Length: 85
Image 1 (spheres, rainbow, N blue to C red):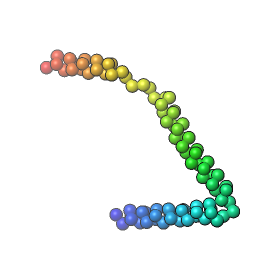
Image 2: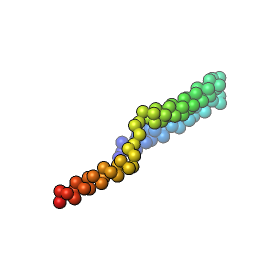
Image 3: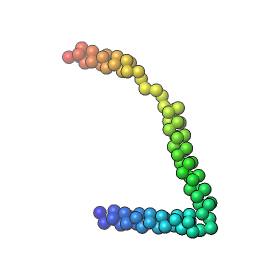
Image 4: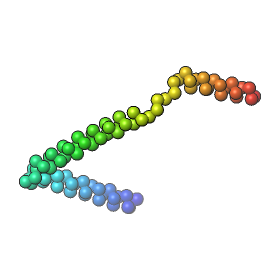
């Protein structure tokens, strides 16, 4: 448990440092426009990448069996079980 707390504290510290660094880059640095452009690009690319991944999954996944076919299979299995008794 001690290690978990150390990792948690390190993540909190890393997050705060990241927030402060990003704030400095956006508001006080001469590269603020480039930082904003890069941030916007990464955010939009992430959303569109997820959209593309969902589309790929939908396009390549075979459709499920119709319910009627599943019901017939269940009925056949039940008949087999009844006959074996």
